[in-house]
Length: 358
Ligand SMILES: [Cu+2]
Image (cartoon, rainbow, N blue to C red; front, side):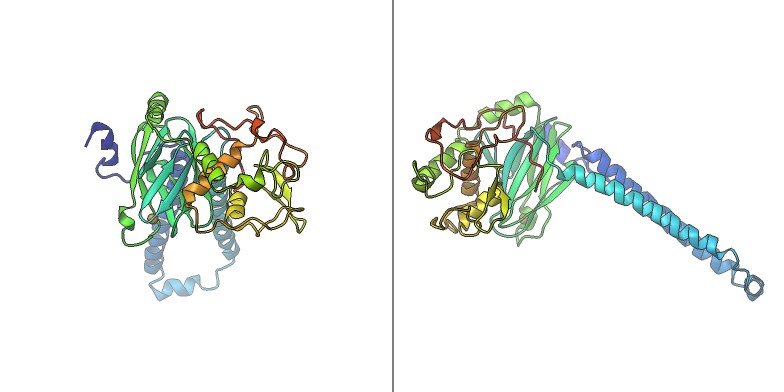
């Protein structure tokens, strides 16, 4: 075991170390819950012993009988005090939950595919890894996750984050590591016979070391892989047609609302793109026929991620707003100079636009 791995085996600890920006807040809330529960456990225990002894003699029972005039005071206390305490728990917990669920702007976005029994992680610059996650310290990281088979759960105790990884549905999770080191990564959902081995390491590095590590990979960025796959699957036959396109244009489509045949409006996000690749008839854009074949069973979740990354890259994301450029009718007519659309750089800092809806 190297020196940096020592953090994974620090001996007995009541709590895992605090290695993310969430950790102190989560621990404070947890400490409050434990404190309240402990205080009332002891209080109730002592009250039981005291009252059992005090009212043991029938003489006391008789003397006290009928002297319940002040009972309402007691009732008010046992209503108001628990109400106040539980409201504090509720509001504090809600604030902590919202902090974890609202994804930050300008985060590094990685994709995670869980499968029996491993974690596959893809960085936007091209490096991919299995059961290891390299991240820089002090920068927000968003994980967009899906499972290839059963329900898994991505859990990093030192970061105080845990999120289910589901088949057929994207979930996401974010954190900001605060300390370089090596931390446990677990699957926290019983997912089959080798569930206990579905673990790994999160390696938090200084930004310069992280950049060096990223540069060490030889894999292509997912945007490039997605572009090749797009051509290989002949998606461009319809989606790149000039003149009157048979399928909606994909330029500047990501992040935009589109009107469907039934009049409802949906926002084009990862979930919508994934559904449209696998089940094109589910939500057809108004004005188009259902001519696209399904790709269900033909693509791995990673390949779907690559295609989505490529489609996202066809939307111009001005750095100042972090939002795709609004266009008049994004789902209609691919621009004549379709290739003139500037793809978002996949070689850059890996920054993503703000996405707040899940
Ligand atoms: Cu699992």
